[in-house]
Structures are given as structure tokens and as C-alpha cells.
Length: 218
Image (cartoon, rainbow, N blue to C red; front, side, top):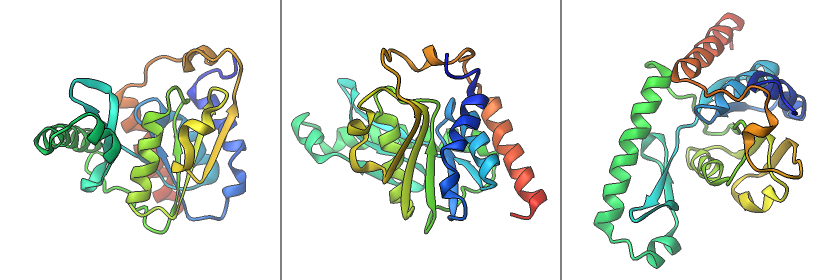
């Protein structure tokens, strides 16, 4: 076992990110499980914490095959090659987009409770999850962060499978993992406590981070 829980994982991950101190960072947790990890990173670096809400655009008859992703503010990235090869018609794409956009906005509103999204324009986006499995959601988050104006994208996780960098490719400018152990089957195998993160915990993490930032004048 590498990590006691997500808070421990976040503290260990923060130790690998100290070289970013002084840069205009926003730490972005991937809901839900990435947010408690990200909260520890943001606290250690004394920088803003936010969520990055993304939804994969799955091919209608093969949902696990991604043809793009959508994020907040109407931001979208698509993969024309997948769309072409899958024979997706514009109306089909539009239907999937509409459904996933609604879910993005619903979740973002739920998590932030009316607070505005932290702007990424001209900032370094540090995207944090509790681990990498396939990497598809993390890749989508990196693409969305860049589309939202981030000048640099760092993807940081406590644990990832060996060879994970090739899965992410150039979607992130810097890739950081505390550990890349052999025998990787699931993220949860490297946590003593990998209980599901609730929406309420995500809201609590963001609220605490906002209160701390207000108190420090950031």
C-alpha cells in the first residue's frame, strides 16, 4: 500500500510539485476522487483550488470510445478522425454534446454552489486526479484546460501504470506521478482507504479552500 487515503496521497504528491512555487498556478481536481487529493496540493502550495468538470463524448453505439469532450463555458474538443471512422452524423454528435453539456453544467453548479469558475487564462493549470487508469478523462481535462486559456498544463497524480506517459502524449506539458508500480490493475489497490468520494465532500473541499484563500487575502 502506497497511500493511507486521498489526503495522504495529496500530501505526497504536493512534495513533487514544489518546483512550481511562484508560478501563477490553479490546482484543478477531477471530481470526484481527485478533489481531496487536489485540496492537499493547493493547500501546500497556497494557490487556488477549483474543479475541472469534463464529460467525454462517447460514440452512441460504443460509449467507451471517445470522439471528444466538453467542459464548462461551452468549450469543446473533438477528434475528427474518430467521428469520421465511426460514421457519426452531425445530428448524432449534436445530441451527445447537448446531453453531456447539460451534465457538465449541472455538476459544476452543484460543486461550486454558485461561485464563479477560477479563470485559467494566462495561468498554469495543475490537473490532479487520484490516479490514472486509462487516462482518457485526464487527457480530456488537459485539452479543456488548454482551451480555457491555460498557458501550461501539468497533469499530476499519486499513482499511474508504467508507460502512462505515452497514453497522455502531448496533451500535458508536464507529467508527474509519485509512483508507477509494476502489477498495476486498479488505482484502489494502492490505497488503504479508497472509499468513494461524495458530492458533499467535493463541495466541502472547495468551500474550505475558498475560506482559506479569503482569510489569507489571495
